[in-house]
Length: 97
Image 1 (cartoon, rainbow, N blue to C red):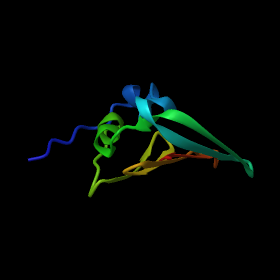
Image 2 (tube, rainbow, N blue to C red; image 1 turned 180 degrees about the horizontal axis):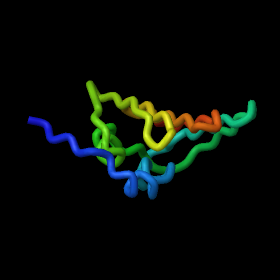
Image 3 (cartoon, rainbow, N blue to C red; image 1 turned 135 degrees about the vertical axis):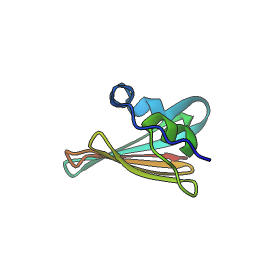
């Protein structure tokens, strides 16, 4: 039987975009869209697994995918790809390169 824990707002509040990234091998492509402008860059590292991120956010992943709204941020994730959409309309996409 699954044990679902309620989200811990204090824990989520302390997260930032780097919390989803694990140092190590690999390359990630980061795309930020804000006010009609688009910024793309690459960085070293890899995304944490869908399960790890679901646990960090206090939500449940289904079929290897995650869709949730946490603290006003829409989070969508599947293996190798994470999308964040903020209340301001800004979007951030981090994907395996």
